[in-house]
Image: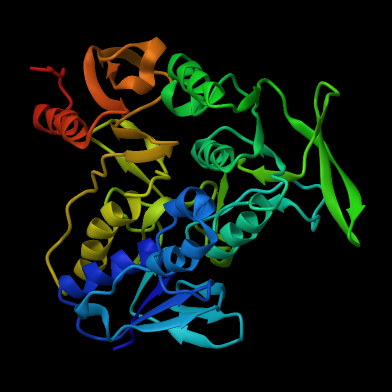
Length: 413
């Protein structure tokens, strides 16, 4: 029998492989990854790895790699190689070197890539954060003496984490955002304003309601280096380093030509099967799928826990299609996320959206970082909880309350 092929060697690919083995697949598995590294943990790329002392950097970099379970030691890894096309009807994929590989089942785990400004391409000092190499390049820029002025474009989680890290290093940091506060599309304007106050109190400067229309460069040491960002108002912001944190795009180009809905990731059913083809599933933040429990439109979930949660369902669906196990259950992947701003842990669980009503269960809006819990409610029911600056036991308390109540009103008793 042909192998199961997993395209994508990050966390989603690794968790899928683990679940396939645990579910009873004892034949060949091939994992193909575009990066030259074995699966590694990405959250430290915008935090710990940027702020580490030079003597600690190599140790931290080595600790990024996930430890492989014994059950997956016989899995074949093809790294530093891209899949350029797929014939889903013929059940084969083609690699960048021209090799074709047939499969019995396919797991799509190619994830996302950071969006970039279509200007000043190739200029020194222009960064994104996605890979180990991205983080290393930014690290070198942030640790220069004298410390550079850093401009972060975008106030999502990656942008604000990077802004906090650069500030801790002694850099002067400006965040340019199109909205009115950090994470506004997720947490809503009220909490966004509170997080903006937290960052500003630590020295971060915010410029809201603006977009970057051009980048100015100047020649330094024989290279073109970014020197300023020009905003939609005409204002110019001098800078030495620019971090682009303007969102991500799903890596779906290799799937084109197969009649799939790739308008926003890969369209799947509630069991993570890719719609319109057989023996193909998707995991991680590239998968767009429904969630009957929350009764919301099909959506992708771009959080660290998503690869693990979706792999549980997708692997069982694929094994059921290959007659290895019984039919799978529909996916319910409770959205969850976490972020660190300085020493402040932000933890979200359940459905957290800007259009929902909010109620403070603990703490208060003008001191949100001192320890707070906020309920997100729809039709009078709590469907999500955001905790800020709370110890782990309080975070766990609210999560369990939400789970035990099955999205009913919370109690703090």
